[in-house]
Image (cartoon, rainbow, N blue to C red):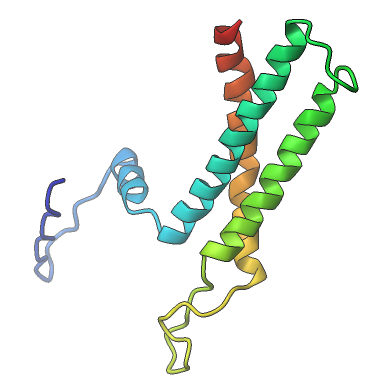
Length: 146
């Protein structure tokens, strides 16, 4: 890893260099807040594990394996999405602390307890992840498996 470059000191009256859209987004990507990274990582892990299970079920059905209940792919996708949303919210609730304020209270800066906002962060991180992982599994990986 390379060391971060020191930010040059700007003198008063000196123009601020304008960054391009791509440079701004790349910087935001590299310096993503830890709670966001944890929320995305927990939801992504759950989504990948469940997508692998769904692919195994789908492949078994397409090869003529008789499973109890018949073809329940729609139910399996529904359970997949609801489980990714629920577990993603729960895990994010457990691993992402509520941010502390800048006041002089006992919770300042230490990131106190948990709140529904941590679970909401996990839920809103899980929605696009559940969709994208399922699309990649069904549209990209499934045709490669055969």
